[in-house]
Image 1 (cartoon, rainbow, N blue to C red):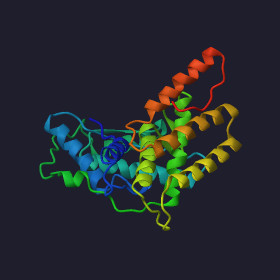
Image 2: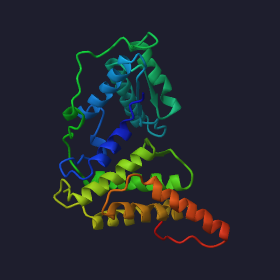
Image 3: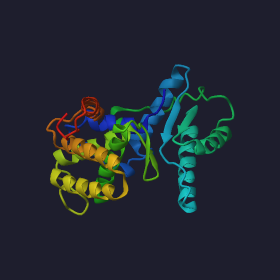
Length: 276
């Protein structure tokens, strides 16, 4: 079994989307050292080892930063600390987001786990309750976190619509789960009247404004074809944020737009931004 960290956070938000007490802070503040995430990780180990099978740690989303030596060393240190925690807790293997980080993970696991696995580490003294797995971490909801969710959501969906399933954004490797977290948090913050740390309410109008700003920024740096995909991504993000009922997966309406685009292309017409 694999400890899918972003998947667990998204599942947490989705399943508890109606509960106004279950608002998570900025995604950057929800790390694997948070109590509910550490409990989830150790429960994964315990569950696997009890059955004699390996437990795989989660993917560190950090990637090498070639243009900035200081930032790169910080990223590598973050990956190393992450893998040391996994190996020490009892995971039997792990994965990383970039092949350049394989040596870092290998060094850690070869040092802490020189044997093929550590399935004999049963964690008999560990017990995870529902409260442990559902404990909301302390933290804040910030303008930077709100903007980051919008930027990541748009950036990933734009790439996804063009057939790319995994994309580096802001020195992190992002996939569908992180895009889901981004739009899920936006929906939850808007519909449960969350307040930024500066006192402003998180509203659909505020999200619209930041989406407009992100679109304007993208228009300056991407090709016309890519910007067209950004427009589709923005339309989807706005719809998913404003819909009264939380939508289970963003890829469902996104795929409907892919099929609609193919129909228009084969029919020789222009694709218009209409609800999927």
